[in-house]
Image 1 (tube, chains in turn red, cyan):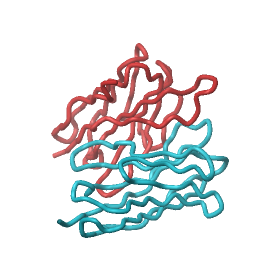
Image 2 (tube, helix red, strand yellow):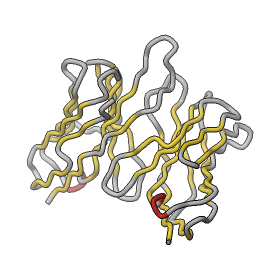
Image 3 (cartoon, helix red, strand yellow):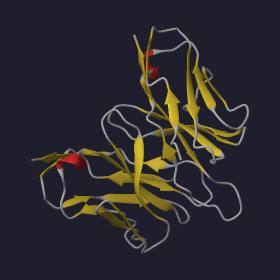
Length: 118
Length: 112
């Protein structure tokens, strides 16, 4: 169990640029989640995948955001035309789930990507 | 809807003091409850969990009991250390759900 890995740890970019983050989940986990955390708040759910299928997206995820998990392993989160309000910590998590007898498994988090928009 | 409310911080304690961080929840169904800890510049680490009423989760001297009658999951530790300084998040995951709902977090400072 090598843990959830996120890259990069920090990203500084100018307003209007596109950014992409990567998440590598724990290898035996079939579920992958993206959350956003702003200063002084708890994480807020953005989207989740079961294997390669994106099954739920939050209303927080505007049209400028897109997430993929093409082979059911790593995932990418892209933000197009970044805005000041996108500055936050983007957290990825993974868990087992969705199979018979596997319920409410805790989500394991990576260290996050901190995005700063200039 | 589902929600988690936890006591506001910061909480400042001296080393070896007793810690309580209150957490109450609102949920449909029978959620699992969690405490996560976040150290500066890091992601969230699962501290402990409880999956049904009256379960007690424990880890590293921390413990919390799932109280369905009071919809609470208070975090306790008998003797805190400086290294326990961090932000603590109470969270719930509803049965068959996928979205973990977090409280706003409580920052703990422990002085030597």
